[in-house]
Picture (cartoon, rainbow, N blue to C red):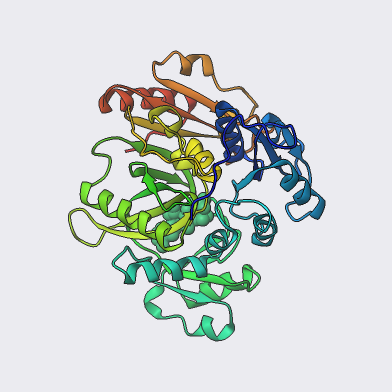
Length: 404
Ligand code: ATP
Ligand code: MG
C-alpha cells in the first residue's frame, strides 16, 4: 500500500507547516525531532515530562500521559503523521491515533514487540520459514506452566513478558527453587524463562521498511553490554564473522516483512558458542523504533536511522544507507558524571573533543544518575585501526573501562 507523502515544508490547509509527531520524549524522540527539523518539518512530542529531552527541542510539546484523550486529540490535530520512540507506549493509544492519522509503526506491530511471549512466537514462525530461531524458552503465566518448565531450560533467565528494558525485569535462576522464588518476586506476572546461553558476542541489525514494502538496512552492529546496558557498539568491516552478519541481515528483513512493518526496526541477536569456530546465531528481541546501537549512523552513514524513521513515516522514498567511515559508539552513562569519591563533575569534553573524529551527543538531561543514558560519543576515522585507537583514548579519558 502506498500513500501520498507528507512533504517537508508543505503548507497544510491549517496554514501550518507539515508537522510530524512522536509518542515519547526520550533521547530517541529528541534525535528523531532533530532529523525531522533538519528536513524542514515541524515537530510535536507527546510526553508528560516538561523536561523531556525531545520536548525541550520540539516546536510543540504536549505534556500529558500517553493515554490522555485530550493529549492524543491535540497530537492528531497538530500532526500529519505519527511515530513512537518508546516501545512501552500503550498500544491502545497508538490504535486511537492510527484510526485518524498514518501511524508508523502500526499498533499491532508495536504490540508484538511489547510482549516477549508474542515476540518469541513471531520469531519461531519466522524460523520455521527458514529464519533464525530464539533461545529455547517457555512462557510462564500460571503455576501449572511454572511446574511444567523443562529441566533443560535451567540455568536460565526469567524475563517479564512486558515492560523490561536495559536488563530490568530479569532475574538469573540456577534451579527450580530459584525459578519459583523469582517468579514470586516478579509478582507472578506473565514471564518467559530463557535458557542461559554461552555468548560469544552480541549484534543487532536495523532495517527500515516503507508502506510500499521497500526495505533497506544498515550493516550489522557488534554490541558490548555491561550490567545489561549497551556500553559499546562497533561497526566496521570485519567486526563480525561475515556469514553470520549476512544471515542476521536476511533474518531481520524477513522479520520486518512478515510483520508488514512500516518504520525503523532493530533486531538483537546473540552469537552462541556451539562448539563451531564462528558460533551460531540466535535471535534475542526487537525494538520497534530506532535503537541505541544505531546511534553511530548519525556520523558514520550518509543517512541516519532517524532520517529513515522520518522518511518511512512521511511516506518518502527510502534509500539504502552507505556507511562511509568505520565507527565506534560509546554510551555515556551517568556514572561518568561522578569522580572516584562520588563527587559530581562534568566529564572533560574539551580533552575528548581534541581527539579527531569524535562527535558528542548529549541529551539535555539535568540529573546524572548511575546507569542513566546521558548521551553518546561517536568516533569515526578513515581506518579501523584509527577508530579503535581513538575510541580507546576517549574511553580512557572518560573513565570507561577497556573492552576487547
Ligand atoms: P534492552 O535494553 O536491550 O531492551 P532487555 O532488558 O530487554 O534489554 P535483553 O536484551 O533480553 O534485555 O537482555 C539483556 C542482556 O542480557 C543481553 O544483551 C545479554 O547480554 C544478556 N542475556 C539476555 N538473555 C540471555 C540468554 N538467554 N543467555 C545469555 N545471556 C542473555
Ligand atoms: Mg536487549
